[in-house]
Length: 288
Image (cartoon, rainbow, N blue to C red; front, side):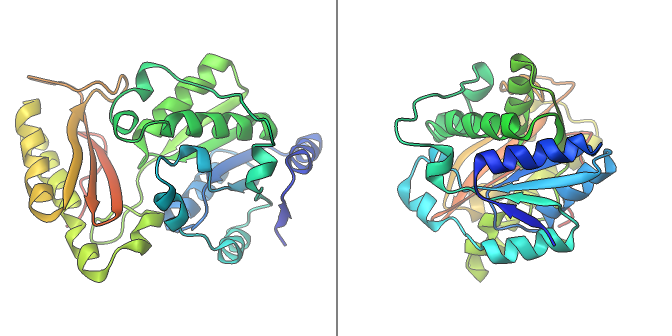
């Protein structure tokens, strides 16, 4: 039976007790609405040597820039707990907002240049809220392996930078994107798509595949790769925030001829905003 705690001190104590028994903790921070992508992170923590996996489930209000987006975010704690138990999770931390942000709360963790562009440009305050809550969760957990999905590519890079900069006793692992058989990246937001929009959403996978195939054929022009990725998305989506070729580590936009690159995408179907990415020459192209 998975142990569920709601109080931060109880969570810290439970993690300390596991380590005192010689267990190595794997942490999977989530906002719930768990899908196979999240469950793959649990498996990855075990594969990396974690003898006990703990999952946090917290829809963090500080990383939402729109109240309607926060209200619409899917929540189903009972189903999430069933999934955790079936996957062999030892401990779930599911706090209330007030437990993480008590009255008078005013401390935040801010990362610099990595957080300024892409999501940082289109979702003001998002990364300030994300790094703050992740830092709190890492501190509460203590020494551990923490696994993050690379679908949130910029988030993964920022968390890794923050952890190293602050000297936290945590190993950050980025797990490759988990996709549906038709190429759509798994996301909790996918359940908000209408059947028609679910079909339209595959344009992202088609665009990433077109760029990946061109890269494999020797194309190295950032402008050409961007155009190949963008074309199907522009035809299918209501609005594009960005389709960019970036440096995989600095996250800065690349121009001209490139030797290493990732393509990152953020686009809207109605009220649903989807993100995706592909590190060219490293990640497999989506199957579409």
